[in-house]
Length: 187
Image 1 (cartoon, rainbow, N blue to C red):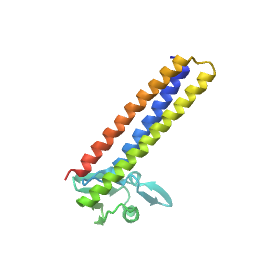
Image 2: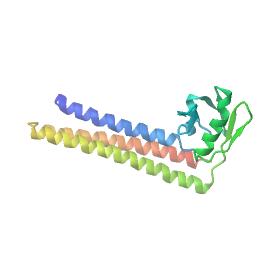
Image 3: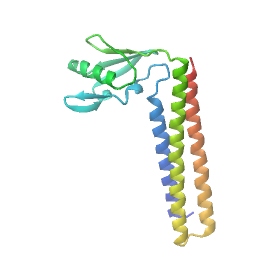
Image 4: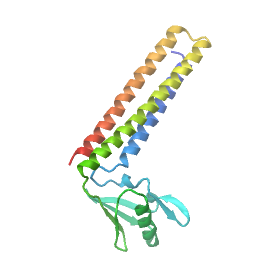
């Protein structure tokens, strides 16, 4: 395989890796019935006029499986953090004791679990679309190289390799989605 073809395949792998990482980040913010600090990754706090991720203004921990504890680094930040959590539409009710904020994670209903599973599958499909898009881009680049003088056999070998990589990443997506679905459906 030529250097150019290998570069195209590596670029496709990199794009597919990004799709997997994005899927994992998105699924990490979904709550599965147990406390996870990543549930608050999308919460932005008004930190002296600047929208800042909550993780940059407070320590976030899970003292037990059903509680998230948020310890602000500056005491005056308790109210803005509490407001940001309420306004984030995550469905959490923060409890403020003046020192720290606690969030009790309620148990998920069967209906909510099924809704989350649908959301997981939608995120998985979005990742599959990204992987297929990376495959399409790589195949188009191979066709351009073929027009510029790459042999037909080398082009066929390259597109076969790209398809193998695509299939491998499709299996990874299926595995990530399956694990998250099992996590959500576990009571």
